[in-house]
Image (cartoon, rainbow, N blue to C red; front, top):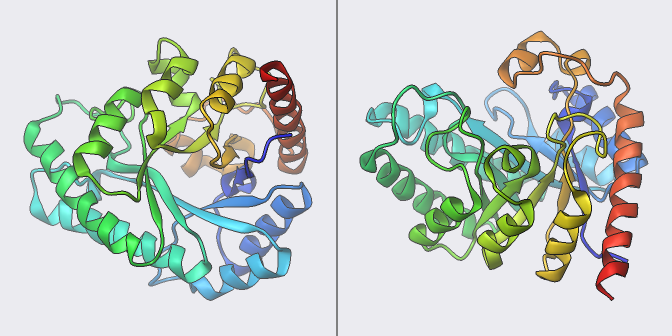
Length: 291
């Protein structure tokens, strides 16, 4: 039996984080059997984190926090004002995590999540390294680990593989900075998902379980047994968080933002339940294969 905490991204139920919607999402994740819910970082000037903290406590589930930088707060930008906005947003995400009892802030924290039309620059990379070094230092004061999620070539020009992400994290040199592996992105960029686990090595700290098409787990082309056996053999003990989105649920703005051009499911409660059952079965099978 695996000891990894199984989580689910709140976006499975949509991205509304009003107090009522937050409570409903957190409750649904807990009822499905998850031990963790990944919450997109809120705007602290608009929403009160106390509402989220109260809902988490009421439903008895742990939080993680995630975000993706954009064009207006890209820390690889040559514009100092843009970098400063990114720095502020990352630090605000750490503050939100601390306020709700989360010990992890991850996602696309190293650059904007968009299709770049230029090659990466040494100056841009240096800017991201300096900024994340500062953010990691601040996060350590709150007991928060910061994750760097590498993404596919259409959503970042800086980090597209586990090997690149590990080298980036090690350059920063913070003990509380880890590689965040998302199987959706890795399926596009890595030659072998199991090898990617080895490339991340002991820096691997968080994993998104997502099909190659972001639909229901087990309905795509990923070799889950090969991946999970590699994780267990490597001694990976971090969270495994389901990430599956539907344009039917998230609405048109979010669908465009993350390129959900077709709807693959309509019932988030059913997908959440099916996903955790799938992961449990796959992890148990992988564990038995290694004994």
